[in-house]
Image 1 (cartoon, rainbow, N blue to C red):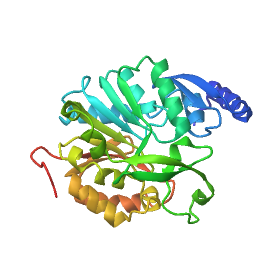
Image 2: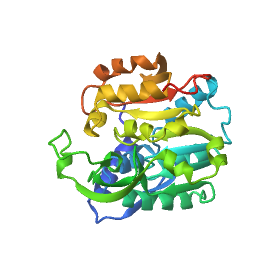
Image 3: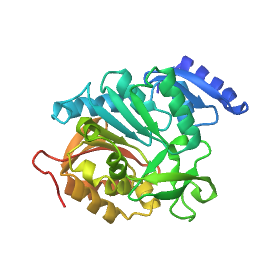
Length: 297
């Protein structure tokens, strides 16, 4: 690895910032002007050091979906950002002209505060709606675990077993949980008509999200999703049940590995569980349904 003196200086400065009393830090990044919490050791530090977040992944995903014909409305449609955190994805997707509007969901109160602030400071208040909901398979209130130094690993609590990241010791906050289908029931049909892409990163809870989004997914909307077997099991869903869910919803997926996407039939999803066995092993998946397959149930 080549030594980067500027990045090293930023790292030292971030250490100092992190030790100060809690406050907001504004950073100019490829994703937009983003304000983060100085106590967010993982995402905050990454943004401060690299001045971007998943820029290559965003470009790769959008380019692939355009190339494969799944994004005919690129530049004009609606994107959903589920688990939006502080807005790194939805703001970038609009700032770089990939979509014209977005709906963002983020249940963590502090992240939601920063999300609304970041939308405003990027001048996108009229283009991005945000809601403080967790999305799952049913409507309820639930406990959201708060990862102390990584705002990207907050998750809906399933149990309090001793797991790899000491989740049992995390503080929790009550949040409102709804389904995507329920959310769109309250909106005009035009909103669904304009929907071009779903981007979801909810720490292994994606299987439940899919179960609560069957009506929306029946329209063939492509989904960019985190794939994290440890997180899936932590959510209370077995890997076999997760496989059943995605087999019902999609026909194929694109697996990002070594900087390129490989297209696979949905029945091959089980092959990835052995590749990503360890708690910190994670990947990016694009789920699609081939035209003509309006339902697999």
